[in-house]
Image (cartoon, rainbow, N blue to C red; front, side):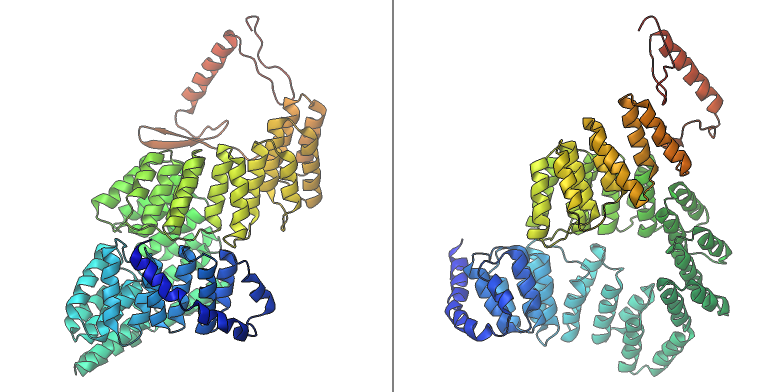
Length: 632
């Protein structure tokens, strides 16, 4: 610890006696149960108590306890303290606390910048912004509006121009809150032509956008322009109607949304798109397609909506076909389109198309947002190109929680459990707090790599340290982890202690473990419970049937098959994918859709004849041998 830091820590530590004297006075303000937790606080306890603080006085007492218990080095706790101090209006104390932190993160800078931008002291916001940049922290869409607001207060014209350029360079220009902030700055600086240029470039103008521009014209005395703009705004009353359609759709009242839509005399592209989204968000693909096909004019938002509709329903091939139709129609894809296509590539395993999408991004100078980077990482990882995924991740100037979740999940998928854990540690060091998805990836990584003890550890700290209650996916990961490791009894105990009913994934994980270790008796008990619960997932029945087959218990296997027939349970047909010369093909058993299917099956027959001739034999599902050979 540097001498400067020691001095600053001492300046706060010298106040501890005063804080301690307040404890008896403030104990009445905090319940006995909460005050008891201060005797041996954890970070989870402190975060809970900080959320309950209603005054800066209580906040300072909790701060003293954090220092007394040696917990002042935890980044998440300090960030929360800074945030609450700003919210409660004590900026000097927030800044004093901020100065004690050796390496403040972006979250802390943003809160302090926002605090100073809301009072008549914008210079400190600008100084903090430059300090943040000098520290190598890239601003995000939450930083720029407050810095620009500070520029509007004085006003600082050249600072605003530079910050505007930085926002565009970092891909934050298209964000509505950033655009409105820039517009407000130019209006405050009386640069109406520049303000109008920004206003005209905003694709989805909000009420703030219109009000700022109209106020700018009024301030300059150009009343005619202000009136004309107000009249133009009135002509867009369809914004309200479109918002009504969207509201009814999100509330599940599709008939009301459709009724309003049908009564509109002048439907614009936004109206049609709202209706497409209404059906798409409820999984009504056919209705969404019908509305989409009736649209007289389609823009990139319309195409993105119908493509994403198919992606959500797992219709990836159809989504790709729509993408090609969109390109043929002359509509230029944007980053939203590419995100949808990359999702299709991930599920289809189509690395060739994924690479084409990536090349399109580079060739057309599409702004690579954090979301787009995350999609690229996920696509390359799921298509087997883990190193490319890692290179993109490491090259990202800014990473959010999703970025870390995607790379941890990618490492887990490929069996790199140790590397996934290392990424989790680096994520914490960056100041980001993990969420439920982070732990799903982490537990999955431990499961795939056989790291049973580490899996137990992270499952425990998920709730004890981070306050995240495990959901059914986390329990499924734990059952899979313990099952793979041979701890079937412990896996059963985990299921019995679940606060929610286990789903098919949980039972499937345990059944898979039973198959691995040949435990038929536990498998039978699992199936009995599934029957009592009315769960008829075909995969579980097939798994149990295969277990009986492998144990040569043909009668039990036939009983399972009979249960499936009686209940109308059909085995889902598996689909395989293969990439040849940059084209991805999918096929199933007895698939005759391919143009060369006759030649394909002829070749398969030749291969089977060859296998029989060299002594290959196998058994059918009823245990009968199919091929025999004296050479075996």
